[in-house]
Image (cartoon, rainbow, N blue to C red; front, side, top):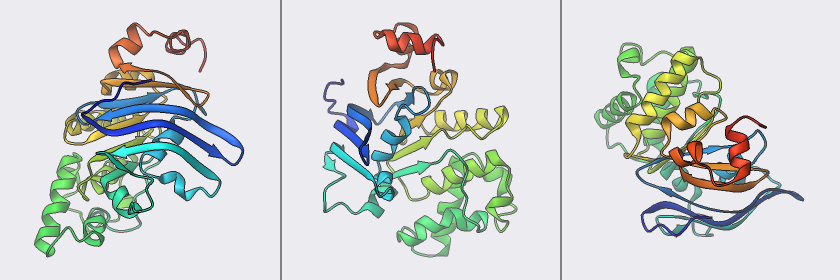
Length: 257
């Protein structure tokens, strides 16, 4: 479906996912590059979130899930027996559909990852990581005077930006976002989209979204999934204005979905 890309941060080749006897993803090949935001679109149940979760082995947490094919991160097979999954998930962070801050202080939400991964030498180091992560997530000015407050006391949009700060704090290379705005109001959604623009290029970013307008706004590349297959993959402008596949055209124009 996509030619080999020497600049690819992640290369997936012939990936299939089964849940028991049910095939959820069928022979998907795609590249995620460093410099563009890649959006996965498609109707509910089409496999876009399932495929996203293969990219940092979140499907390992589902007993019935089996993943076949090859996924390389900087040329390294992430499903190899020698792969440290904890380290992998530090390198390939994830932001979920529903904000899920830890029941800890704002400070501890962000400091938790750097502390367990040994990224901070001392408290001053940790303070710097927390501040820079919250700044990058566009949250510092709103919370700098209440870092001891619980992360769960923040608004939904702030909680989601806190989760993004938490992902950034362990210095990832890739950020996966699984419908990060679906539980948020339009103002909070706009802030997350603005944040995605600011993070582009610093991290490889993949976003699953059911909102086609959002995909058009935030991404430079789009992949359209349908019934577990990758129907079309290309530049976002081409997918939305000049799709090659009839199924893509039908979905974009609202004939189904």
